[in-house]
Image (tube, rainbow, N blue to C red):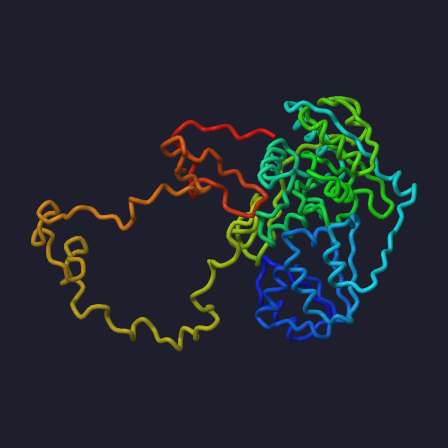
Length: 446
């Protein structure tokens, strides 16, 4: 059986080549798959079986148009299957339009499997929230921490790394290559903590995740169940902890009711015995290891090749592209010295006798006349200095240390430092420099 995957964030050529060569099974994301359909590289006339995984999610507004378009291009007599752990009435539109005489199959969860997952609601103050998270993530074993926003995932990852807990992030602002690299670092144990948005709630499996922590409780119970399902998989035991601050208590009660769970509720602060009970073992704090993939060989620092390998790095930086190697051929490609003639046969470098040449310091540079004949700098006309930039433009707002426009007036310096991270990019701030000027605003604590 020939299979291939189709998804965005990577180049088209390999996916197009796979389609041209013919495949039996395609696992695809709707957006990129429609791109290939519209460019004439995919023909669905011979499709026999269409499977829609996470069907309730695909039936939501953002995906429904794409999914409907793809299903409408498959033969009506083909088989269509919809899967999800949380099927609900949201898929009714797809069922009515594309399924004939549908049959529902439901796999019941037995009581033994339910007992493998233990839910805790930790009532914490905003001030102690991060300390509790740090303690749990520093314990032995893998931890998966969920936040509600991409910004929250980024800031929490940075805070954990700074506290000595190696962590990587996973969210929609990262390129596909950086997502794959961070997930590989988590799976391999280079980083025992993954901080993610709901992008990791469905379809991602990593063995032996001991803790799932809802640093931010999700909006609705389906997301809560999918997030929690990253642990206690295939009969393994797992613990799910929801961090509950004062303003979230009413919301999480509704979540528990809708999800059908009966959590153990505790008021917790740093150093409480329950933290050791839930996540036993010595808390280990260490520096974040390099998660860069080494490219090529040869003599970069620390045994790396080129800029991007070796040394401590958390981001993608520049990959490849610049070579510090060749240009000159190998010495072995030159002929033997005797074939190139001796220096005595090459003739003098100058027809003049050496003693007739002007001393080096007295020689003119190329064909220019003496400086006194060219006039002094002050005698030369100098026009006003021009600048090709359009000064009428508003100040650029970026993340590289330049000024930002502020609705309160004036620009303000970017206060973020240049510490590397797991996002796959150059640290903020001018290249090779440090931020300066203005009052530095402290980073928002998590």
